[in-house]
Length: 268
Image (tube, rainbow, N blue to C red; front, side):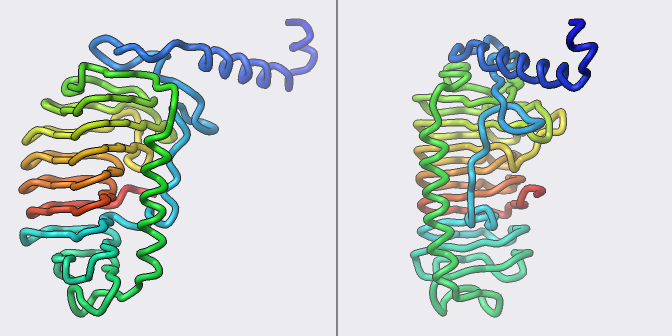
């Protein structure tokens, strides 16, 4: 230690290296017990953050709702941010202009008037980026937690990390994601994701929706009056039931269905 006293610049570097080594050496892959907190969830994500590296959404990250086969709507919803659908015709985007605070992109002259923007080039690129982001999230290896809660995370507090389920995932009661503003969560779900009516996904400790990624191979359902946080990367349908709200992005490779919902893009 006398060497470090003589050179004060060495000690911070040594401690940072030691911390990284300790975090890298922590175990994982267990169910984490009743709560998914503790060091097994942690990897260095970036300077100042823990968890896996975030998923790069590229141009898909400019959309609050993006789909390939349409956006249906039971009036009135309130969407903050851009929406779009491609390659299906703009006639399959059923939101009205007054329901969207942002831009509405379509691939042809159809779509809600007078706000629809005919821009197939932008949409084609965004859909490709959405598919790339899905594959990125799906392809992450060495999960920190595998089959946590046997597919039921209601009632848990989830630390940053990579989570993997080979089964459907249920949120039957409120769930909390607790971590700092630069921490990252990736949830790999091989089946459906179902959030029960009236339940909440809650963020704590400064966690941000932009750093939470739900990669779901089957349908996603957000229950009536439920509240959801994070970016959905859905292989199929994202169904948002009556009165549910979401802070994040709904990026679906089939359709998004809305019923009097509030969906807001996450803070940058």
